[in-house]
Amino acid sequence: MIKEYKPNEIEAKWQKEWENKNIYRTENELEGKENYYVLEMFSYPSGKLHVGHLRNYTIGDAIARYKKMNGYNVLHPFGWDSFGLPAENAAIDNNVHPGEWTKKNIENMKRQLKLMGISHDWSREIATYTEEYYKWNQWFFIKMYEKGLKKKKKSYVNWCPECNTVLANEQVESGKCWRHGKTDVIQKELSQWYLKITDYADELLKGHQELRGHWPEQVLTMQKNWIGKSFGTEVDFKLPIENGDDITIPAFTTRSDTLYGVTYVVLAPEHSLVKEIILKENPSIKDAVEAMINEDKIFRTAEDKEKEGVFTGKYVINPINNELVPLWIANYVLMDYGTGAVMAVPAHDERDFAFAKKYNLPVRTVIKSLDDTQNDDTKAMTGEGILVNSSEFDGEKNTEAKIKIAEKLESIGLGKKTTNYRLHDWLISRQRYWGTPIPIIYDEDGNMHLEKIENLPVKLPSDIQFSGNGNPLETSDAFKNVILPNGKKGRRETDTMDTFFDSSWYYLRYLNPNMTEAPFDTQNANSWMPVDQYIGGIEHAVMHLLYARFFHKALRDMGLHNTNE
Ligand code: ANZ
Ligand code: ZN
Image (cartoon, rainbow, N blue to C red; front, side, top):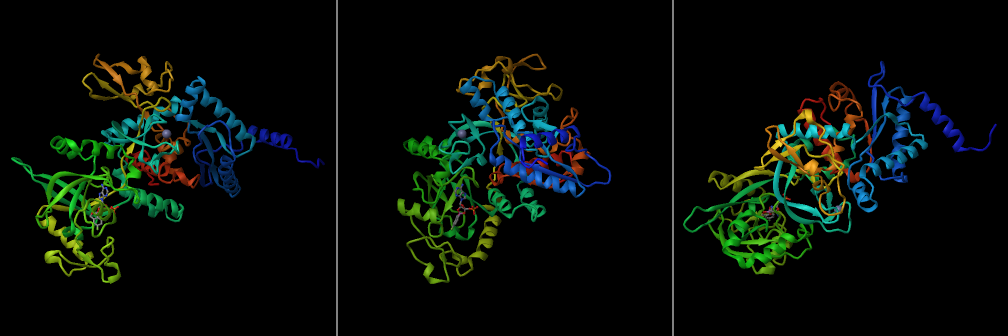
C-alpha cells in the first residue's frame, strides 16, 4: 500500500475517470428523481482563482454531492460573467483585445477549478461574452421595450471619472464608485436607458414573504430598506406668478400633521423650476446653485454635512392656512426622492432645524410632547404628541391629525395621499465597449428604431481603438453607420448594457445552454425553478439579487415561465 498521499497522482487519476464517465453530467429530467439545483454566484474571469472563490465553490460542491447521494437529480453548473471593465482596461494597458484576455482567463480558471475536482457539469458551461449568449440580452431588451419596461430619460446621473461611464444608484457606495473605492462619483446630465424596476417595487417587497425562511433575514432587510416604501402625502404649495397662473409645487411629506409648522419650502437645486424660472429672474444665485449640483449626492445629504442653501427671492402659499412662506434651494433636498421639494418644519425635523438656525428662519412648534423633557427649543422635537398652533386641529394626537389633515387637503384639492419609493429605475446604459450592444438605431431625425429580431445578435465590432478616452465603440464606423430598412442613413446606439443585465437570467440559460430558438425552455424552467440553493456574497443583496428577482418576474409576465422567485 502507498502510505503517502500524492495529490498529483491520485487526484489526476480519479478526475480523469470521473470525466470519462461523465458522472457530473445532469439530464433535465431523470425518471423517479426529484430535481435539485445548486448554484454558485456567477464568476467573473479575473484570471486566477483565489481562496474566496474556493470557499464559495466548496460549499456548493459539498451540497451537490450530499444531495446526489440522497437520490436527487442534481444540477450544479458553472459559467462566466465575462463582460465588464477589467477586460477593457487590460486592453488599454496591455494592448490585447478584451476577448482574448477574457478567453485566456477563462481557460486558466477552468483548469484550476478542474484541478480542485469540484463536481460541476461542464457540459453546460456558458459565457456572457459569446454571441450565443448576448444575443438573448438583446432579445430581452427588445421584448421589454415592447412591454413598456424600458425608457430613455435625461437626468442627472452618477458618473465615475475612473470608469468613464455612468453607474446605477446601486453601484455607488457612500458617494464612491463600487469599483473605485477612492473615486468620488460626480453628477452629469445625460440621456440614458432605464429598466423600469419600479413597476415591480411592490411585488419585490411582497415577494419577501415567499422568501422568508429560505433567504437570510439580513438580505431581506437590506432589500426592504433599499426599496424604501414610504406612505405620505403630496402637499401642493402654490407659487403666485404675476400676470399668469400660479405654479403648483407638490412636496412629499410623511408628516402632514406638521403642516401648520412649515416656515419655508425647499427645492432641490436640480428641480426643473430652478432652471426654468428662478435662475432666469434671479441669475445672481446661479453659482451657488451649480455648486450644490456638483456636490456629491450621498455626501450632500449626510446628517453631519453642513447644510447649504440660497433664498430664491420668492414666496409660496401654504395650502392649509394660506400663509406665505419663503422658497429656498438647499443641498439637503434631493431631486430623485419624492417630488424634489420639501415643506420644512424646523421645530420637528432635525435637518430643517439645523438649516433654520444657520439661516435665521423661524421655528414654530406645532406638536407638544407629553414627556416634557422633549420640549426643548435647542433641538427639533421629532417624537409624538398633541397639536398646538394648528387651528381646528389643536389638542388632537399627532398620529390622528396626520390623517385628518391629509384628508382635508384632499377635500380642497390641494393634496393627495401617496406612496413613495426610494428605489429608482435601473440605469442600464454604459459608455463602454465590452458589453452587450443595445439593439437600437436612430434615424437622421433622431427617432428611435428597434433592431429586428432576425438581425440579432448585433455583434460587437473588432475595428476598435482602445485609447482610454471616451467610449471605444464610437471609434468603429462600421458599427455606428447603418442603413435603415427604408434606405435612409441611421446611427447605431453605442452604449452597451450594464453587465448586471447579463447576470439577471444566466441561471435559466444553464437549463438549455445551447438552445438557439429561445433563451431557455419554458417547461424546463418551470420544473427547475426556483434554484434550491444559491451561494454567494452579501455584497450582492441590493444589486444582483434585486435585479435578478425583478428580471425573473418580468420574464414570468412575458410568459416565459411560471414561477415568482
Ligand atoms: C415635512 C416633515 C416634517 C418631514 C417633519 C419630516 C419630519 P422618508 O420617511 O424617508 O420617506 N423629504 C421628502 N422629499 C425629500 C427630498 N427629495 N430630499 C430630502 N428630503 C426629503 O422621509 C420623508 C421625509 O423626508 C419628508 O417628510 C420630507 O420631510 C423629507 F417633522 O416633510 B418631511
Ligand atoms: Zn469606477
